[in-house]
Image 1 (spheres, helix red, strand yellow):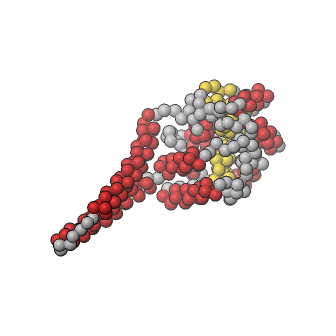
Image 2 (cartoon, helix red, strand yellow):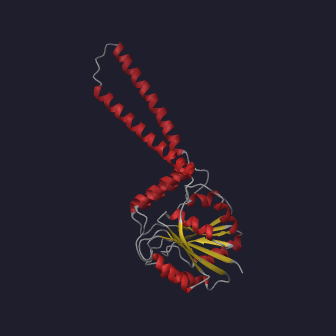
Image 3 (cartoon, one colour):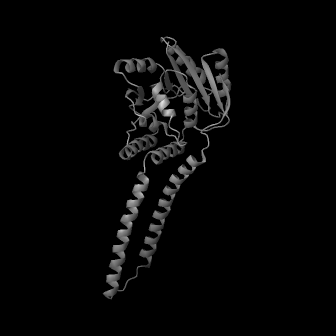
Amino acid sequence: MSLLSIVVPCYNEEETVDLFYASLTKVVDQMDLEYEVIFVNDGSKDSTLEKMLALYKAHPGVVRVIDFSRNFGKEGALLAGLRAAKGDYVTVMDADLQDPPEYIPKMFEVMEKNGNDVVGTRRVSRKGEPKIRSWFARKFYKLINRFTEVEIVDGARDFRLMKRQVVDAILSLKEYGRFSKGLFVWVGFKCEYLEYENIKRVAGETKWSFVKLLRYALDGIIEYTDMPLWIISWVGGFLTVIMLVFLLVLLVLSLLGKALSSTVLIIAVVLFMGGIILLSTGILGEYLAKTYDEVRGRPNYIIRKFYE
């Protein structure tokens, strides 16, 4: 019998863990396969770990729990779960039931029917999300897809079914800075997406604030494209030409005897150029920081205890 590994990163999900497990097992118990559920406790500050351990004790051999020493972020939790997964097939899910478990049989059906290596999911709407957040999300996908070598599908979720070969390919990528939405696509393989309307959390509140999502989006742009460097290079070149023309005009006017009172204009130009320089330095600093993270070689996470 095939083994399905279900990886579930969690951070402060005490209200959803039991609901998720009940909903999940109701579906996979009807399928002709064995399965394991790998909960990753990403440094939760509530009773998430206790809820996980109760399930671990009640379902030995099925539930496994990875407990981090602190909060390392979803990317670290996802990586730890993928490394621990033993299955011939692996899926990643959120515990808030925004990833509907009833789609798992559909994924297997599509994979078998069309010969896919990956069957992912994507939201066709962002109903229920703040409008400003939805607007930034759409702009992010348009921006990153314009400058990257692979297409990151708008609305794509981490919730996907992958064959063992795909998971091994993802784990072979050793970079510290990981943007899984990009990694899933970068490794290639034959992929198809199932679409569904946005589903609200079953309980609790999202841990992704607007600032965290913005930081995550910037990480994705920096890690998957050199577009910001390309932009500042062209902006710098363009401004240099403009300033040269401006200085030539001032020189010509001076030679013609025109009285110029350009102090305010010059101050404005200097301040503008200073802002451009600071922005450019900040962008270069982001790339340098990413390089520094890679060179240090620190682990993506530290496991306090692995319950299996």
